[in-house]
Image (cartoon, rainbow over all chains, first blue to last red; front, side, top):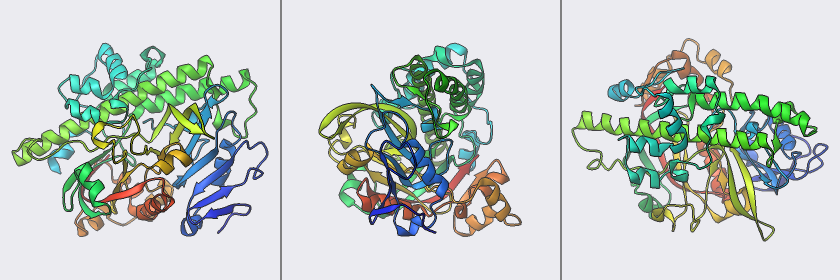
Length: 98
Length: 361
């Protein structure tokens, strides 16, 4: 099943456009090919988009091909924030620290 | 396998061989893997080949709750349960001979991979600070699309406290793997009657995949200090990065991708492209496709251990349910995941490792 409104950038990257949901400051990028895209759950995409709304996020809310649902942030997610304007969130690290 | 299973404590809430006093535990939280080495468990070269030298600065043990201390004291030096494992593996495929050579990997070589973290200690730190952050959201007037995104401005006291506590948990995890690596070497020595040195049991690399770190990155041509959150994502720094040990400076940072117990694990290298696109990050594992509950249902009436034994993989596990939860079908095929990050150029494949023996919690 492919999820509406996602845009394929190239063979390995899928874009979650900045207007996917309200309040996104950057776009999302999910590293999946068309085969793995079939197993991509909409809840995971929503998590990538939610992270993109956080203050101070830089460049993109990214997710790796092993993405699955996590607490707030997806597991398989990468998000970087400017230390002068951005935030830090325990959900962005998860329970299993390190 | 028998000796490894007996010598490395595993299972839910497993208790360790280490008895920590409160003072020891504070030292461990500050010094991480270095604490273990100073206490006779491992050697200096292990630390050189560990991310952040196995000891991240800025940890503050005074911010840790009594409950986290309590959970941490008995669980240091334990594997735990879930997807954590200790595996004896062998190198069954090399994708880049030159790179493999630099990492000391060659075809049919026997390797050991240890996948575990900060156990109940880190779990408690996360729980404690989610509460703190939920209060901070109101205090700083954030409107969030999901309350699970609870956070605080990086410059706030709440953020500083979380970062210092998370760093203590990161150090706890590095100490944990260092202890387990030491006992693994001892187990091989006991069984084979040869020293770890003569068996070539040096550490290839130790890397985190659930951590937030303050790092320098170039964004639109400008150098910036960022706090990079990697949750189920592995640091993958390129050749030449100053944080790499001298031995790997020319090839890039080794990335370890632990797979499920029936298929494979991978060793990759970090790239410049990862630096440009993903703040020097890549994938971390296979990724679940079935919930733990679904997997248990699917495994009903099956002997997962025997299915694996038929394929030449010996499994020892404290819990029957863990084997069901962790069976291969519960995960994406790790090869598909690794192929994508390789083709995307955010890391490159060096070697594939196949399991021979698995210790599971």
